[in-house]
Image (cartoon, rainbow, N blue to C red; front, top):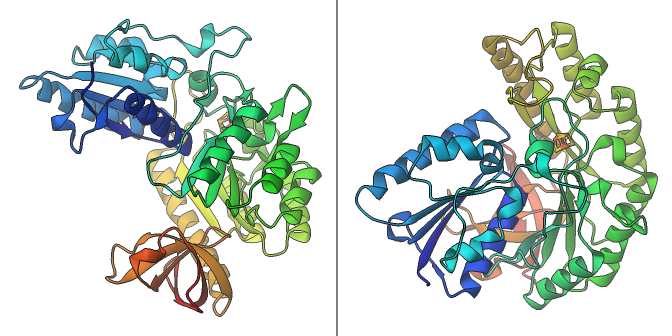
Length: 440
Ligand code: SF4
């Protein structure tokens, strides 16, 4: 049995990597990708459960496919984190869904595509024994891509009190170094220029107590030749050893950018979030990283409106943001997730207060990001060209080693190449640059 499939992906980079792997699984069985869901024999929704808004959107898509099924027959599969969290409910609420595959069941896709799948049998992460049920796919590259996401570990043991991830992705497991190196060799053969090592908490990578993340990163940095840039995410501030900072500083291929989610600037909120570090620890870490890695770019995640957040707590977050001077920040407000420790906490912050605080924080971070980038005008950078600029005809969009975007005039032939540019002006968060001399 073969035909055409359509895959919709929601959420994080891990989901993107896993969707790429599912695409490869289906293509290996003779299936081909449909341009539109209305032409597909299998529609797959690879879902996210991190925020309610993501789940609401997916319920909307399931509703659309229910409507579509009134006029034509196809198989609808819901997989990913929302499938893991709400498997039974999805089956009960929508008869249009044919299969629900939890996080640990994605491999069943091949059986379904061959026409032999068992229906409606989600498995919960809680049911897992110590042996790793999650299986890493061997290969995650999207067709024709020159940048790749490479999962190296999966799951999380941290149980931050607001986060659903440990419940839908299970406990941490690390991928074998042999499998990681094998995939990197294949990526090199395909001409990939940049890889991002992925995990819910990459710093926890631990292969049988013989290989930890700093050593793995150093090995990868030393083995790659054609892959020029290595990134990694996400990192937890409680798990950054000095050794890792040294590896970043010593290897030119490891990018000078760390995404280090601080989440909040108040110790009392950090404690209730179960983050297991203090603002003082974070300051020390930033100081050490910046002293060892010159030119380091630092980004973070910041959450506003966690239960019990007082005006004073919020001011401490603003203070931390001013003191650290992040290059970028992903800012968002607390969204209660059923099943997490924070869900029933008293003193939920009113929605309007969350929005007000978020606005203040965004404005502050925007000023800081702008000032930090402005200081870089005139610098020369080697950028990796990613795509055509959507808003300006004849321009390309590229990324610096420090994860900044640069637009500059150029031909499409440069996409996928490294090009030297000089940063001339700044529009919002994007530089406008000029090529110094065309190169590869
Ligand atoms: S470290 Fe915390 S926020 Fe990150 S995935 Fe684990 S539980 Fe969630």
